[in-house]
Image: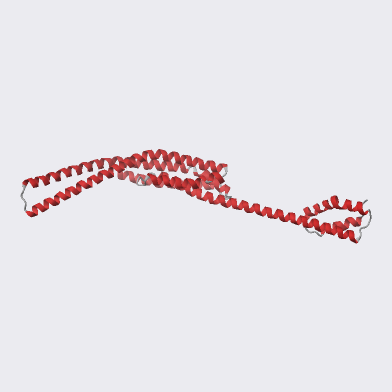
Length: 310
C-alpha cells in the first residue's frame, strides 16, 4: 500500500528536526524505509496513522538518532586516540633524532680529536661506544632515506677512524719514547747537580784529596755526556714528531671536512620527518658557507704553524 503525501511530509519533518547532519539523516531515512515503514504498512494496512503509530515512529527515530550519536562519538574518540598516537610517535621521533644528531656530531668530532695525541685511545673508544647507542636508535624510528644517510656517515667515520688510528699509534709511541728519554735526561741532570753540590762541600771543607776530586769530576763528566746524549736524541725525535704530527693534523681535518659533506642528506631527511620546513637550497647554502669559513680558519692556522715549524 502506498504512503500518503501527509505521511511522507510528517516523517520528513521529523527527520529535519534531528539536527545530526545530512549523513545521519540519510541513514535514518534509509533505515526507516528499509526496516520499519514496509512492516508498518503491511501490518496496519491503513491510509492514516493513529496517535499510537506516531508515537511508535517517534520512538524508532529517537532510537536511531541515539544509535548514530553513539557511533559518531565512538568515531570521534577513535580519531582522538589516533591523533594522540601520531603525536606520541612524533615526539618519540623528535627525541630520538635530536639525541642521535648530537651523538653523530660528537662522533664526527672524534676524527678531529685524534690529532690530539694526549687523549688516551681508551677514552676515544669509550666516547665512540657511548655515542653509537643513541645513533643506532635511528634504525628503529627513521625512514629509509634517514637510515641510509646516517648509515653512510657512520661507515665513513668508522673507516676514517680505523685508518687514522694506525698513523696516530706511531705518533703516540714516539711521544712516549720522548717522554721516557726526558725522564732519563732529568735524572742525569739531577745527578750532575748532586755531584756539583758534593764538589762545593769538598771545596768549602778544604779537602785536597786529588782522587776524590777526580772521582767527582769523572762522575760529573759521565752524567753530562749521558744528559747530552739524551738531549740530542730527544731533539731529533721532536723534529720528526712535529713534522709528522703536523701532517697528521691536516689529514684529520681533511677527513673531517670530507665527512661533513655527507651531513646535509641526513639533516634534511630528519627535518622532513619532523615537518621542520626549510628549503634544500637554503640549508645547503648555510651549511656550505659555514664549512668554507671553517676551512679558511684552519688554513690560516696551518699557515702560521708552518712558519713556526720552519
